[in-house]
Image 1 (tube, rainbow, N blue to C red):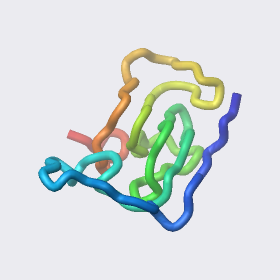
Image 2 (tube, rainbow, N blue to C red; image 1 turned 45 degrees about the horizontal axis):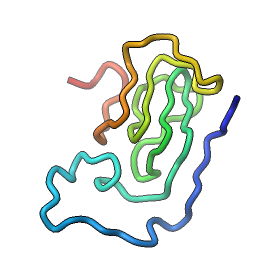
Image 3 (spheres, rainbow, N blue to C red; image 1 turned 120 degrees about the horizontal axis):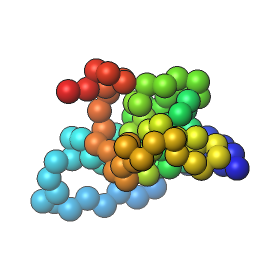
Image 4 (cartoon, one colour; image 1 turned 135 degrees about the horizontal axis):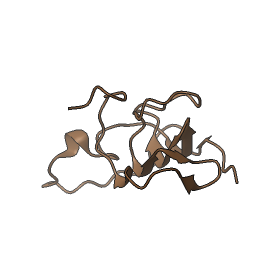
Length: 104
């Protein structure tokens, strides 16, 4: 099962609605970056179901754990929907630029 890496929108959002009292937007996986929706972003042994192109989209052959969004899993086979470890699934990740081994 290879769902394919897809960028599914063009020219950014068509509507934006953010509460006036919303907090912590600087590292929010959706509101902190702009761009188009990217679905099923598989890269090496990692995957992210939903990300935005304004964040980092890792190349397909790069194992840098650096694409962040909604529905993330590190150490898996995203093209076959199987995991190789139960240590790294996380539904939501804050936006950060910290390739593998550089996050503190």
